[in-house]
Length: 274
Image 1 (cartoon, rainbow, N blue to C red):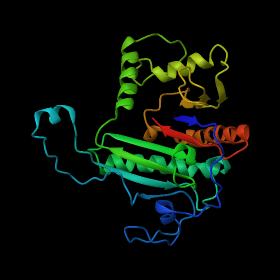
Image 2 (cartoon, rainbow, N blue to C red):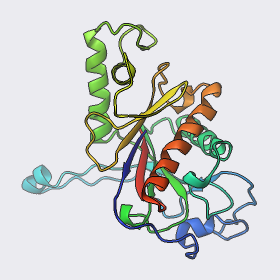
Image 3 (cartoon, rainbow, N blue to C red):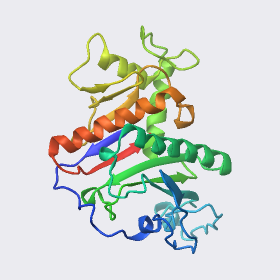
């Protein structure tokens, strides 16, 4: 999980009116598709009424002009898009939620991840992300997260997966570091081990039983933070052990509160789960 921050001014206040898709997430509001949002008391997710992609099979016409066919390359895109409302109180950001209030958000991630894999097995990539604040491109100031499930694996995740496969193939011996289920070394677990041992490096911000939050050695963005497991290999959200849910919630609470307290504002950021 990567969080990239911005040093710009605070986001819009929570008193701003609800608009668009998130307004439809309010209890009893009528959504764009005519459905009425049910009453909810915790985290709530629904299909995005203004989805960038959908699961319908689309026709793909080939370009007859050879030059255009070579330069104007296109492919059909299918997928599903969802919106996750953190809390019925739309004034609360993740930094203002308690770890116990963040738990239902993590449960929603897991439920959606499992649902998409079960109902749409042809989709190959599930991207869960949040753009918080106008400075990070968010048009709605109220706390929410989006899920895009795509027919293809985008370029950056493809490179990440290849790097991890290449590292595992080296079969490097990393004493005391957690590894893959087949015994081969795991790139990110080995990296976490290198930052924590023999003593935590200056890049480590927070360590819990299962997770570590740190500034990655390869950080690209201002105030970039990486949250990753260090105790055991967790292949996906569906593999997150039940006793690690609260641990992850506490880690996310620590990181988002640190951003808010450091800059004394509702800190803008982009957060994504890889």
